[in-house]
Amino acid sequence: MKKTEREAQLATRKTEREAKRATKLAEKAGHKAHMSKVEKAAAKLPAMGADATRILDEVTSNLGLDQANALAEHLKHYVRAMSTERALSAKLTVGQVVTIVSGSYPKFIGRQATVVKPQRIRCYVSVPGYDREVYLFTSDVVPVSTDDAASIPAPATTEATGTEG
Figure (tube, one colour):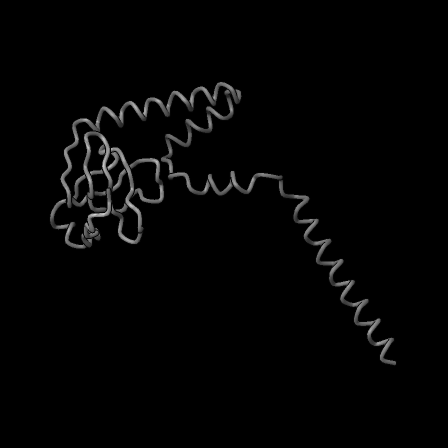
């Protein structure tokens, strides 16, 4: 009696496992390999306006992959050159509150931050809620008026111990 009940339980479990395995295989059949990373990267891209979307659609439908790649490289170079040129004229000071308007960190675009270390064309900023400093072109940030700056906490400073080097 016990043996037959045990065998029935084992058979039920086996049927459930096989059904679960078949479901997983069916899901994988519709999913292309290596695309999850590409989809995650696409989700992190900044939003585009209607004109930029129209141009992108035109490029992707009318150009081959090699020419689209060449165009992308030229656009990246143009953006880098303009960012460097604009960064030369920007003047930032330590403790100044800025808004991040562009850069290679889309998750920070639109957020306010405090300048920790300004340099000639780059700067380090402290973003509230993020424990590391963010490295940006000075052209990637815009100073905020002093009225808006009151809501941003000052960056945490570390005390020198004399062992830093």
